Amino acid sequence: MPPFFAVALRITWIAVLGYWLWAARSAKPARQQEPFAKRLWVYWLPLLVAVFLLGPGDRFGHSFLREQFVPHTTFVYSLGLALAVSGAALAILSRMMLGRNWSATVQLKQEHELITTGPYRLVRHPIYSGLLLLFLGNAVMVGDWRGLLAVAIVLASFWRKLRLEETWLTEHFGESYRLYQARTKALIPEVL
Image (tube, rainbow, N blue to C red; front, side):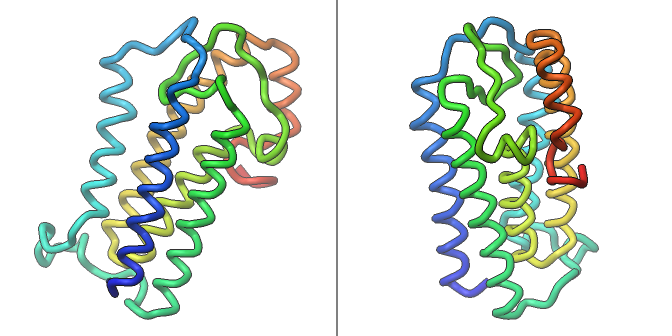
């Protein structure tokens, strides 16, 4: 990957991770939380595998994972970077909208509020949508099949996480959450 694109992608990831760490300081205390071991195996470990897959390609040798699914061209790098930056912006904006209700894990907060404005008007889980777009942009920039495998792993992990969140939110908010689910897709407006 050309140096400009590599640096721009790295800055995008640092911006997301930096904002996440900074903003996490003000989250409300948890009222209910998924057990640590389950979070580790079902959420954090798959994300680490995906990050490993998107890392330097030489560790994968000449395997199928190193085969290209898109050409390494300036246009493809630009498209991938645009997807990554758009995803990062959506994830950060969505995180800002949640405010103190946000958590890195599946939790119900004390005095939990249902947010249905901003990006949450379009999808129920715009942070996941944004992070998936960021991973997809990264995968396009890598250009190898390992990138798409990383996106599939992240999608599976997020899908499992959002299903649990929705169970808890439905139990907590009842009919208001069911109505929100009926009118708003989970990850992609009007699609999924």
